[in-house]
Amino acid sequence: MKITLSCFFALCLASCSPIYYAPNAHNVPLFKKKNDLKIAGHYSMGEDMKAIEIQTAYSFDSLFAFQINGMHTIDNEKANGSYLDFGIGHYKKLPYNWVFEFYVGFGTGVVNWLYGDSYSNYFGLDNPKSRVKFNKLFLQPSIGYAGTNFNFAFSYKFGFLSYSSLSTNIPSDQWANYDLPLINGSSYLMSEPALTLRFGEELIKFHAQLGYSTSLQNNDFKYNQDNWNLNFGLQFSLNKKTLGL
Image (cartoon, rainbow, N blue to C red; front, side, top):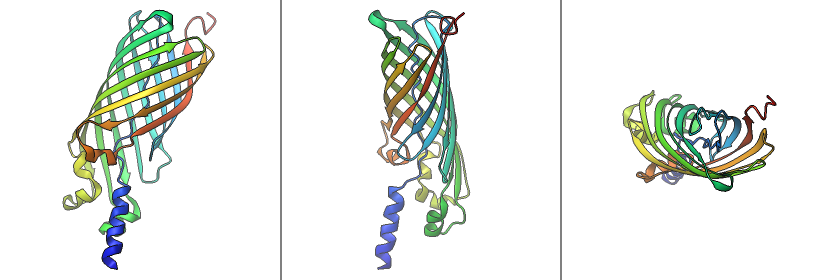
């Protein structure tokens, strides 16, 4: 009976693996001209994580733009994290209000885990915790329709995710119980498509986006990341016309 209960508890822990990566929302501003500023705030939901995100983008040239994006996880007693990235890229207005964009970017973040009583009781450790930093290089092409009252876009983010600076009070002979070998100096190629919808007025639009993330090379890591990101919020579009200047 004890063996059966131990196996059952081990399976429960395995099915609730710690999440060490959650994808952020794609920033798809859909610029059509120079000197446009886009500012957006989103509430994001994954399978395990919830987050607040802020996005900004500015078309400083008739062909080029940059973006800055921030994410901070909330409402999770065991884990919290933050992430910031910067991207620069090219946009091109196409016929019939279609827009092509391509961004290259770099991001950095940190994930903190307090594993809780369930891990403490089962593995016999007092207050196990970990902290790990990560960086992400990414490429993000997108194609979308940018009408005055309606936006639609498909984007694809190809990322190189790398972990560093793992610190923990867990003995190294127990790291496997917490899936720490998967983030101890490890790197992953990530595939992240997303679909974006916006509707409203020229100045302000309601935003909704559904994204998916998966590792291209390590099936084990899929249990330690949020695969989905559903985010919604508001996007503000600022220029001389919308500001009445």
